[in-house]
Every structure is written in C-alpha cells, then in structure tokens.
Image (tube, rainbow over all chains, first blue to last red):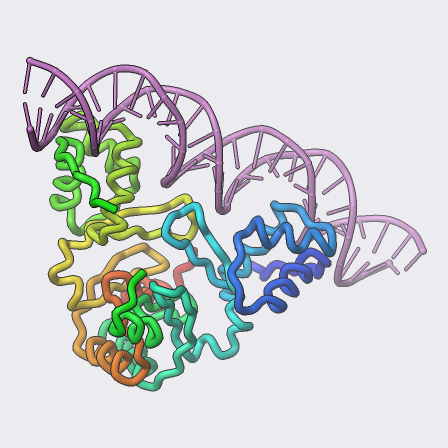
Length: 143
Length: 143
DNA sequence: TTACAATATGAGAGTAATTCTCAAATTTGA
DNA sequence: TCAAATTTGAGAATTACTCTCATATTGTAA
C-alpha cells in the first residue's frame, strides 16, 4: 500500500492559511467557505474535504457545541506543541486552555503502562470550569 | 420566570426505563426509538425531544464518533458513580471504558488546586486507543 | 514544451440526524 | 367533568456533511 502522493493546490493553501490566520476563533464549515471565497475561488465540497483531512491529522479540532447542528472548527496551532500538553475547555465561558502539566503527562504514561490505554492528547479535551468562572461563581454572580 | 410544570407521560417513562435497563450499551436515537416501539407506542419526534432533555440534564451522554452521522447515546448511570471515575473512549473500536484510577483523581485535585480548573468527569472523555486495539496494531493487522 | 497519469476540484444529488410545526391527544388541578 | 397547560406524533424543514463523476490541475518524465 503506497502512500498517496499529495498535490499542492491553491484551495488547500487557502484553507491552511485561513486557519493559521485565525488561530483563536472558531468557525463553522460554512463560515470558513464564505471567508475564503472573499479572497479566492473554492467550492463547499472542497472546504469540507479539507476540513475533514485537517481534523483527522489533528491540525484543527472539531467542537460540536450543545447541539449537533452547531459544529465549529478551530486551529490546533500547528500541533508541534499540542502532543505535549492537554486541552481544557471551560463549559461556562467557552475559553480554550492549553495546559502544560507534568503530572498530567505522567498520568498519560501511567494510563498506557497500567491500563493499556494510549491517550491521544490531540483528541482529548477536558471539560470543566476555569479559574475565572470559578471565581465568578463563588462571588455570587450567576448566568 | 416560572418553572414549567412537567406532566408525566408513558413516553417519558419508556425512555427513562430504556436507558436505565441498558446502562452499558450505546444506541443511536433510531435504535432507541425502535427498541421502545417494540413495547409501547412512541414517535420519533418524542424520542428526540426526550433524548435532548436527558442529554442537557446529564442523565445520558452523547458521543459523536468520527463523523456527525454516527451519533450515539448512553446512560450516564444516574451518575452517582460517574463523578468518581473517568471515561475513556477508544477511537478504533468505539469501546467505552470506565476507569477508576487514583492517579487520575489526584490529577483532578491537582488541576483544581494548582491551575484553578475544576474538571467535570461527567463531561470529560479521554480519547485514545484501548489495550485490545493497541495489541492488534502491534500484531501487524491493518484497517 | 508536451504529454500523461495521478490527484484534486466543484456542482449538485443524496443521506442522516435532528428540529420544527401544529393539530390532536393527554395530563392535572379544581 | 372541565378546561388550561403540556405533550405527542406525522411529516416537512434544516443542517452538516458525504458522494458522484465529469472536468480541471498538478507533477513528472520524455
């Protein structure tokens, strides 16, 4: 089974560029397509195809929000670093946090060695409440 | 803003019962509807409506698999126990594992104490490769 | 260059999972 | 038993892809 050769196209480049240029925001596939179309030609199928590949290879991450219909994608930062740390997502404010923590890493190793499960830090996101929101809640604010 | 009054119906009960009776398996909304229909009357819309509510209230959990089209639901176990352990999901075979691990718990505490982030074990799922699939891959099998 | 095979694109059809709509049925309290 | 509030269900609508396949583009070898 040979590796497929990959051709370089301007559509691929556009999508890659788009994500690299908007690392901190989240977009639906439709928004991505619309944004790119302002600069250059691209079809929706192609956008979906590329998004799918990028998601599989870990360059971008998919979030499915509360309902299935609000799916959103975000750049995963080139993931040189992302294999090395873990990701937290605050369920209150939506903040996405990169956590570089030795204890977590050692848990990953432990999990692999003792439970046989290899955690994929690219695909795993911890959900919970961030420090800012924790503080707010304690302070008596609500909603 | 008053709380809405909630009426008790046999459809609601059926869905609740269905999940309580199949705590360890995952079902698509369609399968849930089909299974319940064998016993009593229920419409698909109603199943979806109830699933949605149960998901929001945390009684069941939604997994979206590789693509949006393979969404699956599972009882969250009344979540008495589920606050105490973590969940792993194998990206190869789909196996859902409950992991009761002290090291993981201490990581949760550490995360809260040192990073201010309170992990919600109910919403967090670790993605990775389970021991069985790890063994297979090493054994040379592919696809 | 040029020719060509491999690969990528895009328009539109197809699919699956919800969500919406609204009239009819059910549940509850009085 | 009545009436108001809520729930149900059939089918249409929506959304987020996925597939198909004819056409276009890319890399390479002559």
